[in-house]
Every structure is written in C-alpha cells, then in structure tokens.
Length: 80
Length: 89
Image (tube, rainbow over all chains, first blue to last red; front, top):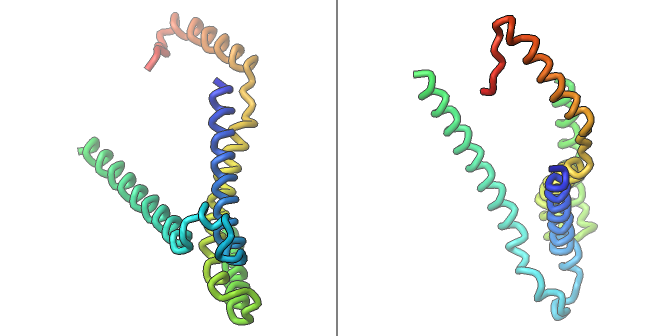
C-alpha cells in the first residue's frame, strides 16, 4: 500500500519539477538565446507559452463549475 | 479576516513590483509582460511538488493499525450482547 503511495508521490513531484524547468527555460532563458541556436527546435513558438497555461486554467475552471453543478443537482434530487 | 488582509497585501506588493518593472524597462518589455503567468504556473508547480513530497513521506504506523483492529473486535464483542449492532455498512 505505501509503495503505491510512494510511487504516486514520486511521479507527481517529477512531473511538477519537469513542468517547472521546461516553463522556466521557455519564458526566461530562450528569448536571450540567438535565433539560430539548435535548442529552439525543442521548444514550441513563444505564443504557446501563454496559450497553454491560460487554456489549462479555463479547462480547470469549467470542470470545477460542472462538478459543483452536478453535485448540487444530485443533492437536490435526493432531497425531493 | 486577518489572513485575507495578508494575502491581499502580498498581491498588491507583487503587482506594484511588476508595474515598476514595466515602467523602468530594465528587462525587455515582452519579458516583463509574461511574468504574472509565469508566477501563477510556478505557484501551481510548487503546490503539486508539496503534495508529491507529502505523499512520499506519509507515515503509515502499521503497529497502530493492528492495535486499532484489535480495539474494533473488542468493542464489537462488548456491544453485541447489549443489543447494539455495529455491523459493516
């Protein structure tokens, strides 16, 4: 049981660290590098650096609203 | 009430810093405009990291689990002749 917990915890921290380094590289370091360096082909164009977090935030917000509405409907149906 | 005042002051300080950075233009303008989104992403990452680390370090206390099971069995034996049914639900 605790091995599964450990594995999930490790996976979570790994994912968060990798997202953090990729995003830091993308937003902060890449604009200072010359445009014909080879590293630019590993990163998407800079507009996506704004689009992807905003899109993810919107998806999260919509999911939260849908979930709250669903729970409210279910509780109302049970009471009636 | 005091906690939200603390959070509000922190937010106001950070936005004042950001506006100041935009005005003095020490860093390139496009850079400074991206900073708020970068901080939000950083905050999310930090939360995920804390959750992951907490999961990894969670103590399970196996001896206490065994003692708890014994306590449950004792309590059931004690309560059943007195008419209280603590079955599985």
